[in-house]
Image (cartoon, rainbow, N blue to C red; front, top):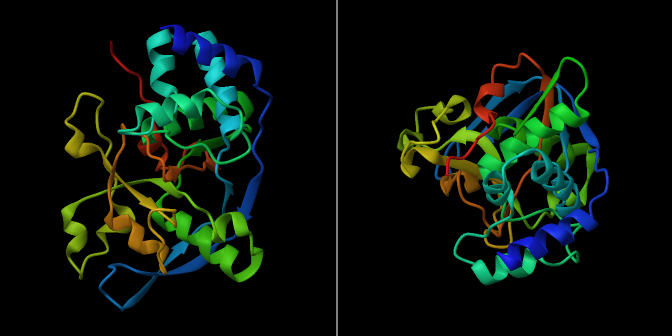
Length: 252
């Protein structure tokens, strides 16, 4: 308990306003390979949107500070970065300010969704919604960056990103495009097997030639990982995918 209280003091002392900058991604045809072992090329039309760079620890700490103030202590604990299987590393990470300007790690899919909802309430523009990106939206960002933006924080990131796409064994059907529109709105009480989410992008653990290959390594939505960060997307408030990036509350 003393360690947790010490963490709270440090976080509160080092919080600053952290409104995100969003990158404009135009409407475009996004080229992708559906399966890592399939060389057939497909494409999909993706509407324009805005997306942030990976959320930094400093930006996430503002969220933590307000959750601590406005929510239960138990809920607050659940939002703290927690690297699965690495308690000592997690404790050290939360006790330092050394990584404030780097993308935050150890944040679960669920907590990233909570951050997106908090950001919408705190900084959101009227009529806009904020959520995690889909696999295809992420690829749209990546394609735009590769061809025009040349942003090294995207091209050479050492962290993958959470997406709202769910993982399902039917993705192995080479004739199916189910991946690009497969989402699952699970309940908090459901078994972990139903909480698998696709991540996408490069990381220090998986250096891939094609970011699409990352989706074959599903991660559990209620866990945080050392190699996974997140970014949020600005869309319309009535966007049909908003419900898949809902807020997640926790029971004691």
